[in-house]
Image (cartoon, one colour):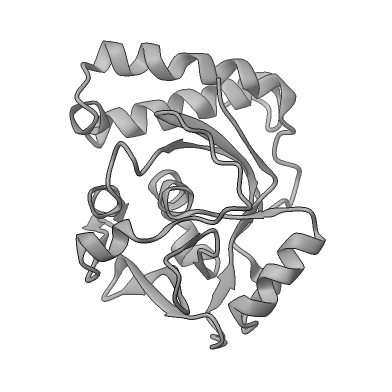
Length: 214
């Protein structure tokens, strides 16, 4: 295995995530051949040298490859998540999920795929209501994750749902008081929602340092 934090590690991790998307059938979902899909995402690797690698004892994820919900609907993406051989699911209706879009303050790349960097599931915001957690995230000069980014995180790192905390997704809202969240139900990754004013001992609020497109 390449040295942790090295350029070789970052490239190997990018290749792993790309292969993971291909194995889960993303080329078919976006209407591409595997070769075309690889070629379309390959330029993202040019952004890797600018990113810091994972430090010893660091719980943050250096980056994940995100496929935009405009291309792959959320209900399809969560079904591609797997945890201990069990697929992810949601009980939210497809039309309802479409209402949850990135908030106006976020600069989300309008492209098929992009990188989201230095992700954290928000262990420091456990049992903090989302209305307050967003203030902490903003003060830290970080950004809340969107639906696409939250699902991408557990697509590439499903073990976080067992080894870390479950998390709310504050970057996608639909105009009411609901906040999307991802947790484990009956051993399966579940996408649902909680109230913006309700604290949960098992839910943090996930965030990232930024977003990079090719």
